[in-house]
Image (cartoon, rainbow, N blue to C red):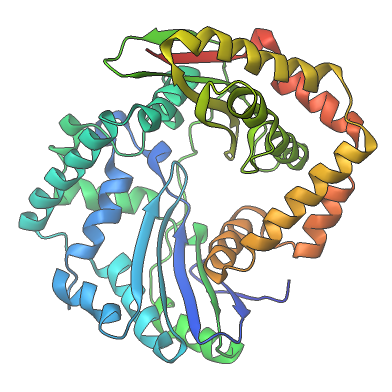
Length: 406
């Protein structure tokens, strides 16, 4: 991948990739998420992501929202368990406008008390909406089950009780303790010269005081499989089966990505989709997901089905697990699986927004970004023996946890 990098004395990094498109993308990725919260701060990372937009030393909330929208751009943000990101899409002529706005939002927010109180209610409504959606809620509850009392197990949105107690003082304390300049990446994909983006980056981010991480992240180290059934007043039963998995730096993660794609990835020809939906009509939505974190990971299989079919569906899922553990893929099957994954990655790379966000995360974690060709070579190098070993490791029946809503 043809990209350019630069690091300021305060530790903030820049990564830029030129694209001839008239639409450009940039953002600031911060290696801070919900797992950095103390129990009394549950929901703080996500709350800050919301209230950053509510006023700065030079702008009110309306002016923040209008700054890019007035020129056809869009400002956005997200929070995960390990990241916070503020990013934008805009016409290439508006690069400086965008870079300055992101800097203003992240480092000059004033968190007006009136806006904080209003946004608390917005987020509590968001939490309640999630509670009303069992197909979404079960993913949060499953990670609470497998990670137990570790911060990584807590959901991102938080709890109404803690959110109502958030103050401006607590917000500033969390930012000082967790927004580390040496764990920030400013990312850009657009039609701008390297010299120009570097100058803008230096102009708007070089005066940020250095702030390096002082406390270590609490690692997850003790997994115990669990099984839990929760009674819900729902028409369908919902089920997740899964296990802890490889972290972001484990060399086996690429093999697990491929195995996950075969098992229940985005293709309608995944094994679980064929078994539960196409052949038996038990489930409309069935999927598997692999989420790697810096010290651990999760592989989970989800499906929703009529209550009378829940046990049949679980047996079918376990049958697919056993097939992957006991029967090596044939040469043609392996070739098709690799080509499918390579094609999916190629389609994803057609979106410059995806490229920007993935590039930033890769640079943050690995201090480099593999080209599409390098990733394809790693996929092509996988063997059926490696997939068999990974399947037996991750899909070990004794190590699987199960959560059912019914």
